[in-house]
Image 1 (cartoon, rainbow, N blue to C red):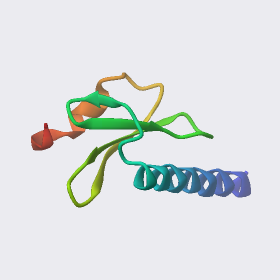
Image 2: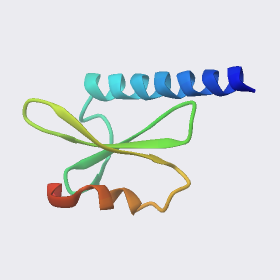
Image 3: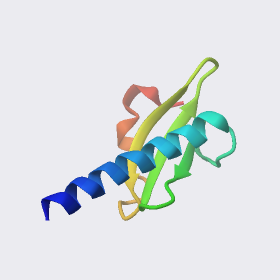
Image 4: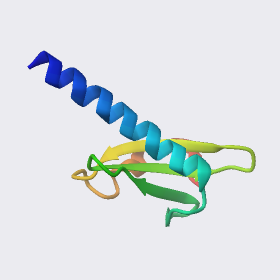
Length: 82
C-alpha cells in the first residue's frame, strides 16, 4: 500500500509539472475563465490549474480538484482580483 501511495504522489507531482510546463510554453493558449485568469486541465488526474499571465511571468493562483465547486478557486484570489 505504501509503495502505491508514493507512486501516486510522484505521478501527481509529475503531472502538475507537465501542466505547468505547457502553461509556460503557451501561457495564452488556455481559455480565460474569469477576468484575466485562465484555466488549464491536467491530463492524467482531474485537476484544474488557474493562473494569470503577468508582463514578465506567469503566476499559478490555485490547483483545484475538478469535483470541487466551479467557483471555489476564486476564494484564493484575495486582493489579487483583476
